[in-house]
Length: 170
Image 1: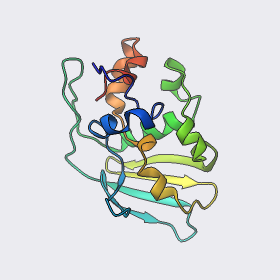
Image 2: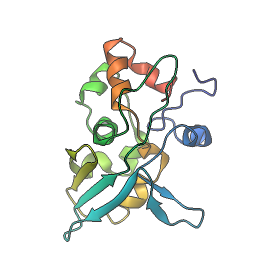
Image 3: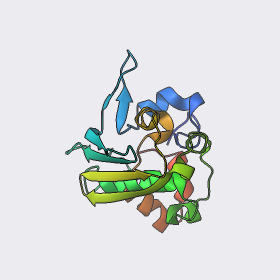
Image 4: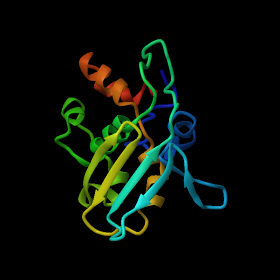
């Protein structure tokens, strides 16, 4: 359990940013020089029309094991889909269990511009945008886009403790 306050990067970004960065990771990350590099995504491709981004995910990435959660699988596309559906879709199942607002994702226009996010296979995710968004990749390197475990979220919903995602990070 965190004593630093809520550590959910989707809702509480600037004040806990350094603590969050020790727990969560993004698809892409900024280097010290400001260049965006692959991180949990090994690579990505952008369609010719600039509206579809296909991410190939790094294999073998583990989520933390704690006294309140023991993952049964590695990080995969389900976690990316969970994270972003939670950020953009108020009718997403987890958001019904724990309604919340995501000001940073909203300010970046993600709910309005992401037409779909889909799992292609365990290690591939495809984002389709409604409009070309030149800084899309750069935005995904920001703390509001850090990824969370779909498996952990499912466990929390089943236990009736969905809000614990804010105070017991994985």
